[in-house]
Amino acid sequence: MSVILDLEILTHCPDDAAALMEKVANACAHAEDVTLPLEVHVLLTDNEGIRTYNREYRGIDKATDVLSFPTISYAAGKTAGQSLKRISREMDVDTGCCFMGDIIISIPRATEQAEEYGHSLTRELGYLTAHAMFHLMGYDHIEEDDKRRMRTMEEKALNAVGINRVTDEELLEKAREMTKLSYAPYSKFTVGTALLAADGTVYTGCNIENSSYGLTICGERTALFKAVSEGKHDFVTIAIAANNAMPWPCGACRQTLYEFAPDLRVLVTWKDQVEEATLRELLPHGFGPKGEAINFLG
Image 1: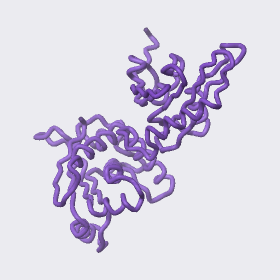
Image 2 (image 1 turned 30 degrees about the horizontal axis):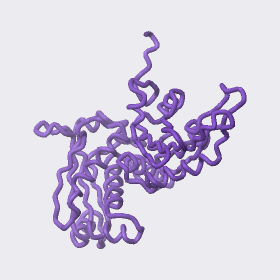
Image 3 (image 1 turned 135 degrees about the vertical axis):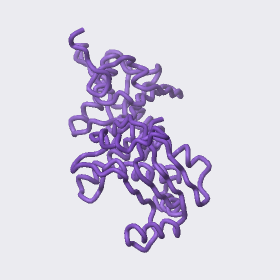
Image 4 (image 1 turned 180 degrees about the vertical axis):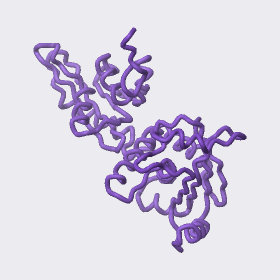
């Protein structure tokens, strides 16, 4: 792991809170492409505790859900992934980690918000961790464009650890529904797909055959091309459904998906079966702008 959390717990919290938060923090660093070893101090407290810090450091005398205090001052318009030299200056020779700052979370407020939004405390705690981590890495949400950018990164990190607004089963069901729209008069092998973008948007597709067989397009590429044509380039999961046989993506689809999402989760379903793999497992030693470099010189 590249992120170590120095966790201080002053209130009752879920037993798996530490493991969850560390997993999310590492997903945030991975999403931002920061490979340096990082350390973050995290304080889990109650509403009165976070109110004290909010009053002392921000002059706001009320409880809130999360506070973050970055150690690093980034250049205008830059975030952690573009500021590795700055981050490396925070290296502690004793720990071997770069200290990024402090995060304070109110567990009671997180619990209240989870109930209000109708989702689990796990998702809420994961979201607050991601939100605070990206603040420590230079993101903000004052302007609308900055807010969208930060939100996309938060969702990308959360989706990477399986904390989604769209569940795997919902994604698989969308893929199954798309098999009904498949145009496969020649092979009779109907395929439906549902591609989850990092911002939580789902793009669906199906295979579309042609009497000139070489012009057939697979469902995976149908969904991908729809997404890219709408400006989406970051993806976290694809669900692929067929009726009678496991529909692992073909080589062309693996390479096309790898162009945008080498760490993509791939779910396949047929009959009552579901299997999962990563795109890197399906395409070992792949190449592309987000994968291994292409050696044009051989």
